[in-house]
Image (cartoon, rainbow, N blue to C red; front, side, top):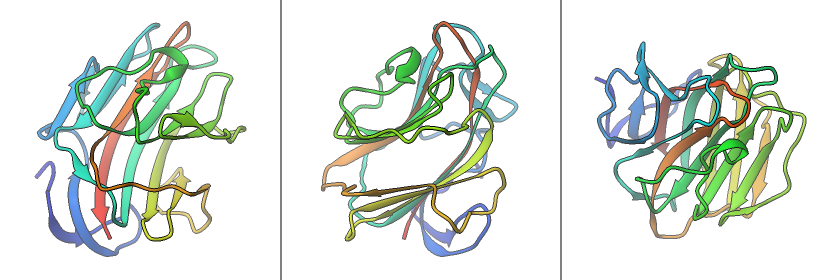
Length: 216
């Protein structure tokens, strides 16, 4: 079954833990429950937000908005590969109040200007991670390498207002956190979770391979 909603199960690419699975796309053989805006579509069961052409932008969102003011883990497998040297420009993960809008091109990596929370994962010469808090960029973390096939885990603790993000080249969740954010919080509003990616004067393939949301 391509995805499941609101069932008890286990989560994490590499370790098991009980939680309520909101949705699970181990691949994109089915895109039911998703809204795509200017993506390159599905090839071999993975979703191309962009291909390796200049001036391309794509976004994908869940079709249903839900509240996120509760503990959760969001896992995804994203690959930035091929294209120019250096490649460009990267991708974003965002929580928005709309699911029918294409984001900013180039280094904007599909980011909307009205996000509640968002992260950008930049390639090209930027090679950085940035948290956008209510659309305001926080201090970037430079020296990153997202131009690979990587596995990500985002663990949100609502009462502590923290978000911890883990990154690995394998399906095993690391022990050490890569990005630890304090003052990260959701209110009671409902949001669409989604990804964006973009190219500009340089390019790369931006490929979403899987994603899963578990409320813990």
